[in-house]
Amino acid sequence: MAKPKKRYVCQACGSISHRWQGQCADCAEWNTLAEDAPATVFSLKHDLSSGGRAVEFVDLDKPGALPTRQPTGLAEFDRALGGGLVPGSAILMGGDPGIGKSTLLLQAAGRIAREGHGVVYVSGEEATGQVRMRAARLGLSDAPVKLAAATGVRDILTTLGQMDAPRFLVIDSIQTMHSDTIEGAPGTVSQVRGCAFELIRYAKENNVALVLVGHVTKDGSIAGPRVLEHMVDVVMSFEGERSHQYRILRALKNRFGAVDEIGVFSMAGEGLEEVANPSLLFLSGRDEPMAGSAVFPAIEGTRPVLLEIQALIVRLQSGATPRRAVVGWDSGRLAMLLAVLESRCGLNFSSAEVYLNVAGGYRLSDPAADLAVAAALVSALADKPLPDRSVWLGEVSLAGEIRPVAHGALRLREAAKLGFAKGFGPVGGNGKEATLDYAGLGQLANLVDRVVGSA
Ligand code: TYD
Ligand code: MG
Image (cartoon, rainbow, N blue to C red; front, side, top):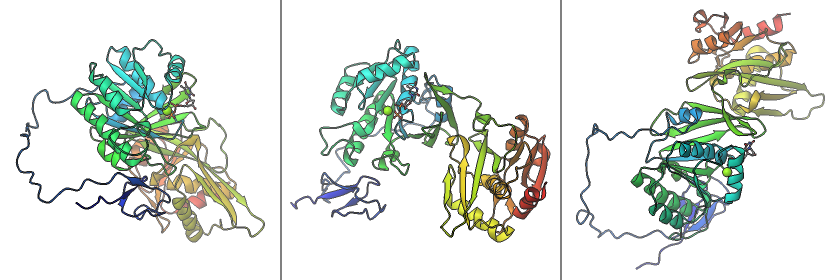
């Protein structure tokens, strides 16, 4: 038999190569290839058409087959999950270090345990004392959560096998888990994959809702192989700027629900508090209008959220290359908008530094924000505030036209409800339905006339 070939697995994307290379040929990451256990070689002579056990088929409408969801005790968490935890499902919870994953899961664990259900929390990163300290701070010391500090998957599964299966199982984090049947250090692709596989199998067989905490790499994807995302039923991401108090829980994949709902929390001294009505959350509480600030009515899932977009323009005297810095928005889209403003509206940003910020640590990807960003930029450049209590929405095309956006009426209605008096957007864009003064703008040049022209 041929000697099994060495394999190298990229720790970022999971692609396999038979030769070590400095850069992964698939995802172009550097220094991510690590040696992995050789693949088992199957012979073509293997015949799989006999000798197996019969597989059971069921009907789609089999009565009683639908599992009932388990509420987490945190309505915002349930909302992001699509209505609670599904028994026998696996959830991958990603997020930057320190964002509050352990806090959120301990809060959910405590509340489910208080309801009288079995809950097991396995921490591979912190000692039990540290988790107990956090529980005390969260006011959950009395919750009957079974807490353990362990990293061996065999130990964990052996222990779980000797007791009644819990309703809720948290593994914090999957990168610290280790299986003695697999070669490699904890955190390598084969370990992460193998440990997740065993834990998910336990969860499915015993109808346990399992949460695996996963670390996130610099570029925002969950560290370890993408394959983990395929193995689980739900991928959630817990986001926010660590220096801000607001946190957003978002489903990136959900086999049991929609992926456009979010949960909003705020990190306080006693853990995460739910924010049931987030629409005014990200506005700064300022009263008088300022140059360079525009309000955009965003939509998150089914809920409107008003966001403040701030632009700052600094004129450069010398010929140095001007900086463009963006927080919370796409820098490519900013470059596009600046180009459209220059070529279609005759504005000159080329010798100025441009800074753009979405207030409150919010990350925005909706193209409907184009007009609000443009309004903030033009207002900053002209050093003139936008009309008082106004909101801006619309997508900007390369030709400088302002295009309609989804849920226009809903966004404007929410803005009106919160005391905004003026809406600017595409011509014919849902303005009539809203109870605020609406002005349709056909071209970006109309925006410039409005801002620069108004005294
Ligand atoms: P943690 O849940 O440990 O983050 P993760 O598991 O995602 O790494 O959260 C850590 C941060 O949360 C830490 O910086 C302190 C803050 N925090 C509070 O502000 N209030 C609290 O009640 C708790 C428990 C944590
Ligand atoms: Mg943690």
